[in-house]
Amino acid sequence: MTFAGNPSSNRYEFGANWASFVDKHYSAERRQLAADKLLSFLGKQSLEGMDFLDIGSGSGLHSLAAFDAKADRIHSFDFDSLSVDTTGKLRKLAGNPPNWVVERGDVLDADYLETLGTWSLVYSWGVLHHTGAMWEAIENAAGKVAPGGLFFISLYSSNVVKPSAQFWLDVKRQYNAANPRQRWRMEYWYIWRFGLGRNPLRLPHLLKQIYEKKKGRGMSYMTDVRDWLGGWPMEFADDNAVIDFLKERFDFELVRISTGEACTEFLFRNPKGR
Ligand SMILES: C[S@@+](CC[C@H](N)C(=O)[O-])C[C@H]1O[C@@H](n2cnc3c(N)ncnc32)[C@H](O)[C@@H]1O
Image (cartoon, rainbow, N blue to C red):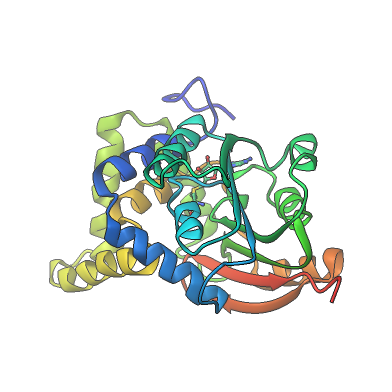
């Protein structure tokens, strides 16, 4: 499918959004919050002794978090060249450490993945549902987890989406076909309808959401609104279907799950090698 307003691509320009996030919003505080959230979901004090594969690194903030958490080795890749450049920028900020590689790569490219070997922590947050082949992407990513290793992913959940998955798929098509001015109007439509619930008295609730977005993973509300409206290709996953799929294909055990938000977070362990 090709969009009228974006004739050269049928993908959302994720990288441009991440470049703008780092230019406008990067801060030491967000860096710290991202590391805190990463470690808390993993239930760890540090990543010492672990290596970290970041699939679809986006801004690179979470690769940087893994660096700060003292991962032995980090490999970040993304399909979008601007995401790669932006992750490279954060690597530079960390002093260009030799144990952190940033490059362009595609989680659907089996030959590329083959060159990467396996990793004790594979991380892919908000990525695999944006590939156009979600289940293949989940399978490819899971195949990179070393025996005994961890798999931390997040996926848009079909269990909580409102008003419906189809509603958002239509909005996304429209957003990707829109010019910058129309996109800007859609972003404000989103804030009015979903941020404020069409009620200005809910402003404190919106401000809380903005604060929580930052507190959660160091992200920015407007960056996430654009990512949500634009993110394409796009699929939704049923939480239990993900758990069953990884159990059946890989015998992965679910260690932790966080539900209720647009993206469900899953932490799995590859029990092989215990
Ligand atoms: C919503 S962003 C998430 C970025 C980051 N993981 C985070 O949590 O902030 C999705 C990212 O996945 C990347 N992506 C999409 N398809 C991909 C693919 N086939 N292989 C690798 N990265 C991909 C996009 O370019 C984008 O940077």
